[in-house]
Image (cartoon, rainbow, N blue to C red; front, side, top):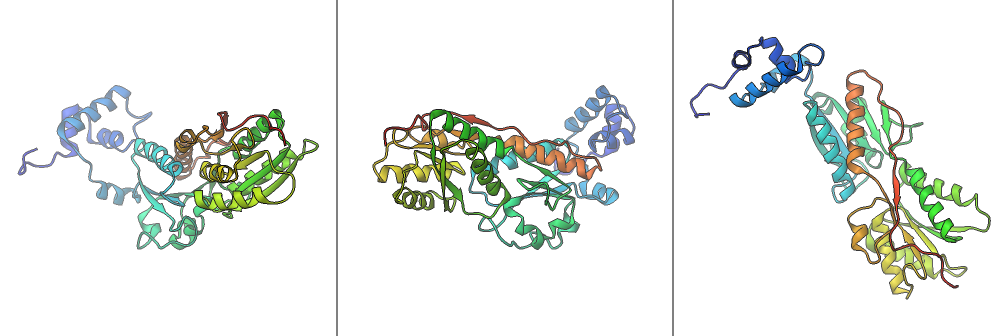
Length: 338
């Protein structure tokens, strides 16, 4: 468009598409279904594209009392998993005319400063990981329509919760290792006080308790390769029957466990089977490649945003956890000789 030309208006779009301005508002506001036909809606969208029309969002939001903006609160941007959650959430939001502001809680957990002068004035709703729940109070996000991710449904702060079936993923790991013949386990657990990690520990302990002759020890570690290396090495040096299977709360912990095993002269999987949880790109960079539980982070983000949009529209979000599945690779095998 030439610099001095007049910006196209909704009236221009209506004239180009041969429809009323009301129809243009319905289509471009994503409120047309059941009120405008699909061919008409496509004609309006095509006319808007051809004219380079952009709606006056500020004016529309004042009329609707809505900013069409939601906040996604995650523990950190340093993990591949939460990048996928954002991608999936933003995709669904964009399809419904919403923008997403991404807000990482400093240091992964703990209080956070309000990213807005007033969150309630700037946002329509919040989607938050339970690992960053402490940030909600600081930004007053718990006073807005809220959907929690990775959160205990029985004690969630939100109007709805969306979870991956983490407990089933851990049971799949345990079943796989038990079927291989493992009976002595070490659980390398994330030292973060979060529901999702508590659920992993509970599911593992409960499943192993159903098989006679099993033992399990737990070592807590920060979610870092060096932290996992130190914790795993200390645990594997502890006197008593050496674990033949090491179950890690995530793939980064598993990478640290690999380093600890090699430092102690243990071969994976001959002397020690190792499993992770996430199926990050790291899982196939390790040698041998890591047996782990695949969590579809983009699907997780999509489901979370779909639930939040349902809450904003006064609907009840769909129930049920998102399935996960075990990916068996070279890091697990039957236990070797003592």
